[in-house]
Image (cartoon, rainbow, N blue to C red):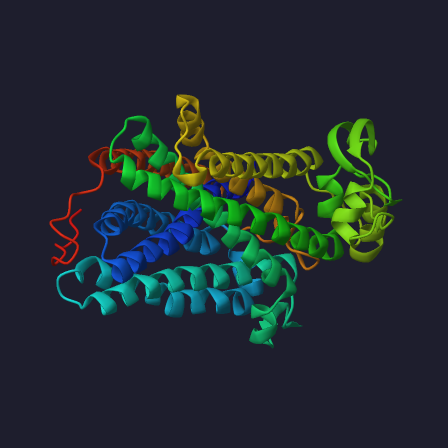
Length: 457
């Protein structure tokens, strides 16, 4: 491996690892705020216990997300300095807004929420968790705006070999951002819903705090079901924008080699990448055209034809991503998402009219189902970023041109090994902390109206 390969591996590993925490943080923040709102309005102790229980797990995950996210910023200077010099004026703007506005908002009010149980009025204390949750979602928007600019650059001009910002509003309202943000947020709610459902199922399986976790499980099922619908609709919008802006990515996702009208959606394909053809391709007729163009006979561009056009437009080179990786990550993203949606639908049916599943397998499946949205999110980001290759900024800067010229193989290999080792340790710490607080379970509260003791961690 050379410096470019090692730098890509390092950024990929740290980014995928970081994004394990992000969607859970986003989704849990709203769930915790909703539970505290229910307690404020009803004064029922069960909502207070659930608020405090899920709040602990939320804070553990939030802290881990902050720690792992810092590494992303450092790598822009260490491994991708040519990229930073080229796009820093544009790319840095939404990231600066995220740090100065959104992260400041969420971290400040989260601190007030943690230490304000005894010192703030119930209404003001409730406002702090909602402001923290809003800040978390705004933070996601700014980061996605920066990433979307890499997918579809807008609001800039090239001056002296650098991209300079000309319209921040165009960057923040990029069409790619407007479809990506709801898709990510709905995915976050699906992740948080599966997490809450799986842990609730663990308690119900052991018959601990059954009334409490029946409420928790039902809430998680409703959140998951609504989120699954939202993921499907927003994913459809995103696929259409992607087909328009990055046709090579969609073609690779479907192993579609030639321009085709009334294109089918591929279920399983075995192909010859070197010669640009498929040996086997099982399809749903008209599915790809419908997904990409909202018509049954719409034309979808193929890899070979796009490659020829890109060579004319951008010059000689291979503009294809790793087709097999794009193809299977796209399918795994959809597959894991569908499994999470089916689990939510089945759970709603089994828990209708206040019932609980009689079979222990239902609880075990719910516990195993925690992994499904995490896997779907991971596959989705791998597809999004790898499908854009060989571009770092689509149509403007290739990945090979973005790497730091002064970096050497040994230093990047050492930092890659170091980050991977540290992240492995952090994973162990995260899991042990979560298991510890889950096993302890919700604390008993003296009375619904009593002053709430400060959270301790």
